[in-house]
Length: 583
View 1 (cartoon, one colour):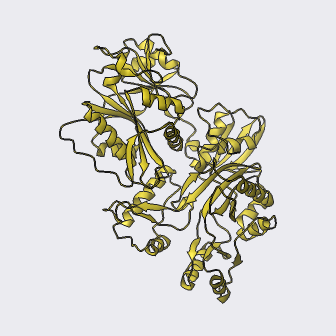
View 2 (cartoon, rainbow, N blue to C red):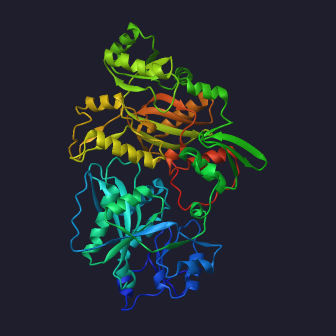
View 3 (tube, rainbow, N blue to C red):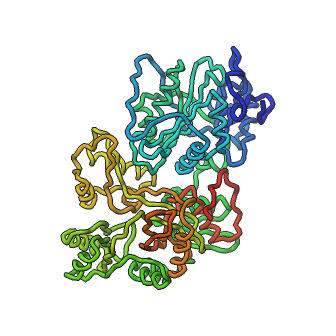
């Protein structure tokens, strides 16, 4: 067997653990997980050897040492390189009285089925801010290492992967005399509307080890992750005095150092840029954390940014984006298709236009985050109400013919599309015992947690009207598996979700976005189109955003492209995993 050190047992890519087992517990056990190594400290007799294994962590990896016999002594072997992880260990003890888990709603949990699914597992990892693993390592571990168990949660309707968890069977791995097991890398796609995915994955893994006769299942959770801790305690986990030790690296830096307080306070849209800049050695000075405003300095040059808006975007370009009526005219002059529309006059001419086109979108000519926009207006009373809502945001209101299709956001940076994503309106999935209001509130909490508080579903007249349009009320109990769209607009700030399509979007749509950005004269922008099919060429232009949220498009390298634009030639550190380019 191969290992970083000749006396360590490394399991993973080529080892099937049942063959190596002996009556006594194996020595110096290290498991290759792809994203890093799991190092079982209780199998090491000498802390010096354990410290040496940790010190040989690979670049871009995240090794974890768990169950070290004396973690404080271990850290003292290399205090400049090792630290005690600020996480709690929780244990679920199995008993004969354990009740069977309730069946999940809208999805099922099963074993990993293919290498292609392993690639989807990686995408969920990245969306959750976790370190991905080479697909071949994940798949070989699953097929060849009987001590590792990979479970996935897949939707019933389209088979898409929405969550994953990895388990380690300690008894199979190193003849653990305690008959233990552990849970690792629980990840749920933050864009999913399905409730209970994390709990179902945890219960399924626990059920697997209970059936094998294991005594307990452990997991490690960051001490300040209140939501996760609440879930685990609800499932019956209890804290145990077990610590983990990690190596001081760039990935773990937030765990053992204190970045400037104002950097930590940045919202996700500014923080992703700050993190990318700091990784390159670019100095970051936060000017206004609440506004996401920073001064980035490198090589004797400084640039002020406000999230993805920088000094290189002119005031003229900003004004053009801000005025949706002007934006329409500029892109239309370049041959870009725009929906039929008019500036509202708040009289019978507005109603005549509605009668002519049949279905409209009403929006203020200036504004952001979807405020004041009403989609799907097809009656005179609805039009009057929509005009009032829009006028509250800005005196000038635009009425446009509603075009069919999905909302496509294309991020253009320095004349190139670096990310493409479909934005879908907020929806909930019925459980058979929760009201529509309860489902909306729960989904809103999940969206807020996944976006740093940026995305929430308003409980307002628009949501109520959207629900009523589908034949429901806030107090109705939605049947199990029933999907209900609760907002008409796909704006992220109103609970919408975003789904990456960079690899499949038609090149013609990318060319339209680049042309629109050039017509406006803006170097960094989010171009919104309505498209019947992202792989086709049909579209209509909706609007341009002068400050697109780059964090919404991970794992696409939007922050990298933005910092490349600001500081050409600045060194970018190698990444553990890079998504395929779409062009």
